[in-house]
Image 1: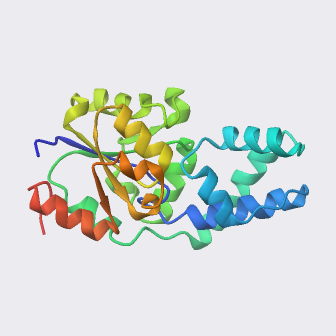
Image 2: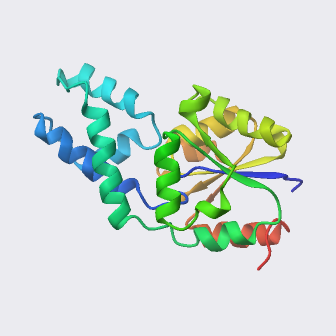
Length: 217
């Protein structure tokens, strides 16, 4: 494998935020009369732009959310994440072991990405290597964010590896003509068909990278 860059998603890949975030999302929606479980929210909206999720819910259910909903939700998430967020098991070991350049490309705002990486002690490894969809006006499944990251590092898309855990993220990586490694969150999702390899954990991805001489033990 002649790979020259690893592009990580953040939520669900580096930081274990999916359940926490979707439970908070469900709790806040319930305030306005819409009942959805955190698991259902995660299954439907994992990896998607928050604004798009809200548009879908408002269109499908007729729910009316205040203009401040997204801001209020992010503030609530920030407080909970600072207290409870943990790195995905194996994340620190994996990034510390890489022999090639790496970065993070997320559909979240930069502030959220930075806070989550700081809370989980991963931030020092990603200084100057954070790509937010809000800064490139490109949200997964559009490949633009991944392509922008590749251009920044001067690496051809075919020489990039994307590590993702969502339908939107896997689809974006495939559309970008990159090698896509999917974590087990998408095993039962149709996107797994498109992924080049599927892994149950970051430890398994680490072993794969070692076998390809992209990481050290």
